[in-house]
Image: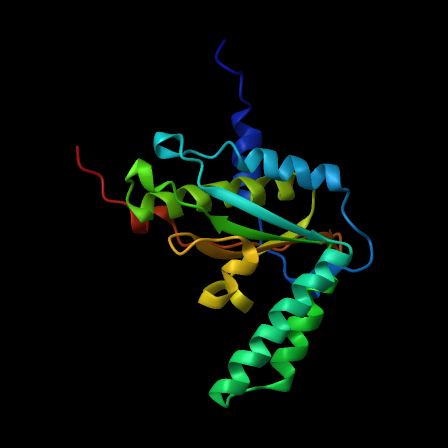
Length: 200
């Protein structure tokens, strides 16, 4: 295979221009084409992965699937919070309503290949890099997207619903929608020079 001829200016532009956009910035009831979501996932599949374990795994909720996800997380929250005596109606409603404001919600899952004998950190990092590819692809399409770890992300009893084993991990949810506005959020970062030590 010949070395690809990359456009570094475009690469820099998309990496530095990518932004998280949240529920309040979503255009509701105007779904993103499934083919674009498939391309987002295809690019996720090309993330770096030690020993080619490819630990990323996804469940895509769209259409009526969004309601199934919303109902699941809201009811599981109610069950857990009622048991612990800290149920909050507003939280329940948010869990039930927010997914319906997105076009697609993608569950981010890390499924471990225990035979590969890799440190869990490497597998988590591989999935995170897959999500970065998703972010960049969504940005290239001008979509609003964010990766959140709310809802059932850290609830052990949610694992089975997502087809996860004990050694696997639910790593949050990637929300995708068309943006409500043409205005792209500004970004800011501290200078990279503050975070780098050069040793020559």
